[in-house]
Length: 55
Image (tube, rainbow, N blue to C red; front, side, top):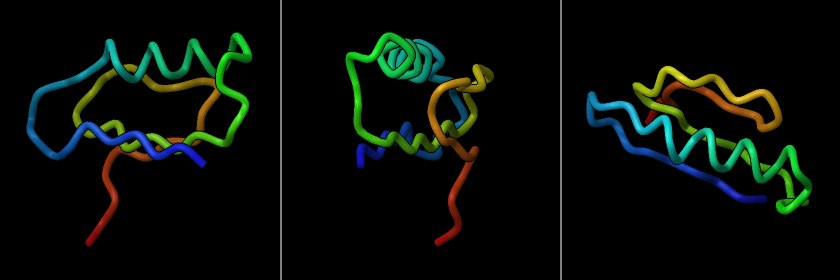
């Protein structure tokens, strides 16, 4: 499993989230991916994701 996190700062990091989603879509990443998107506005289509995870 690959876990991608952008932290909790109130700035989006859409480029990272979209790039990881694109790599998963294209089969470059074959592992399961879980993304914490934080305040990013891009919603992944090929990876599991959640805005924020509680403590």
